[in-house]
Length: 126
Image (cartoon, rainbow, N blue to C red):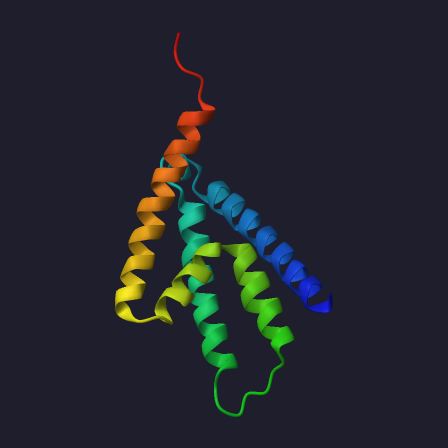
């Protein structure tokens, strides 16, 4: 139960950061934010950088940490900020062929299923 609470805490903080960063970028550049999802792109890139840095630092020889810190910071915080960070980090940890399959399946499958969801949810024109 403690581990779940750490993930929830980190995820809540990450989700709040995602929302705040998106609003900040829209406030700074409202004219450009309307035509491109800058907030989403930014949190995806920041989340990937953070996940890589945290994973690399926590995995260094001599660095002592418990699984709790990894769950709080990587799974929770980075996962709440963006699930793209988990996708990127996990893709880098598998063999190149499997990585290519994961990238293609995630991109093509995700875009296709988002389109299907929109199609199903949108009433047909009469």
